[in-house]
Length: 457
Ligand code: SAH
Ligand code: SF4
Ligand code: F3S
Image (cartoon, rainbow, N blue to C red; front, side, top):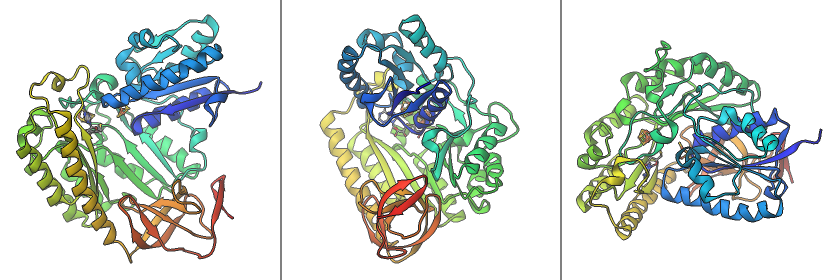
């Protein structure tokens, strides 16, 4: 039978990406194949994110555009999954009546049944039940993972930290860790399909296994993954500073596949605000953690997240953040303006910071970080970095792209590189968001990429 076509729009974080890959596998078993053209799709799924208000707005404006398509093609199925779906449930259909299916973050594994209800019973369905297991139903690599050098593997779902600004515990539920055996099998399968680098995912990976007693904590899991033959690089995200144990820090000294990069979101540099955020550490705790990490692994890259304009943040609090950012010297920083989220305690906090002040603080922070990132990047010019080739550069014509162990993007040209190869590349120029590598084999340019091989023009 002619396959049907599905177009999935992934709007959120790595968890969201992982869920989209799960959906793709489930849909493949129902004879749906991915299409790159939304116009050709029989099924369109928005996998949504609710982390900030802007992300939620994007969902409704996308749905607005889909309404016109649905009027022209009433057979088109429109599904909304992910965190906005979990949060809004039936309200989403009230606001966007052309949506056929709303399925929350717990319902990914029930997707085939939901689609059948829509197609066979011709009715709208909503599934925001907070039930289901964290184990994925399909662990074989999906179409979009084929021929790729890197993959994400979710090791836990949910979050129990309840940072006062954050919607994740409400849309992803309680923290549950997957069984180590399934995780290891999934990674073995990915490696067998050519994946060289795996990133373990969770909202707070440091607390993996502590609550459901598999006898495996996160450092033990890292050790077991490190032993999988053929895996070249191991990464993980996100770590919570309050759970940064000495054992985990020690893993950076002993595990050869563990890449020297830690994403450790600090959120703010002022203790008063960290308390109101319910983060569970102080500025000094954070700085002490960084110091320990650097003692064990001096070349470690550290990146972080910062929220500006949290309710009650004064100029002097913000200046503490600037000072912390300056003294740590992050390799990169993800910066956000505080945004009220439904259900969260901070949404009800008084002394909200105005939009203009938030914008101004964000600009100052970005200016500082861009300068510091560029400085770090410039210090790499002249060095040779081991780059894992990921594919053709999206921005630079005729160049291939990959990452260093410290997770820095390098664009370069090479006459013989394949996706998945580790290539030594000499860094010749630094930019704020990437590095330029000298040609490994000069004179060859690239025109296309098929089945993992980069073809010379
Ligand atoms: N679990 C991870 C990241 C979760 S979301 C952690 O604890 O760090 C990614 C980032 O979005 C957060 O680190 C935070 O900086 C930002 N964020 C979360 N909620 C936000 C909100 N309401 N407004 C602005 N930024 C927010
Ligand atoms: Fe949100 Fe905090 Fe959990 Fe991260 S640790 S997902 S910021 S509640
Ligand atoms: Fe967004 Fe949900 Fe991830 S809210 S950041 S997609 S967990």
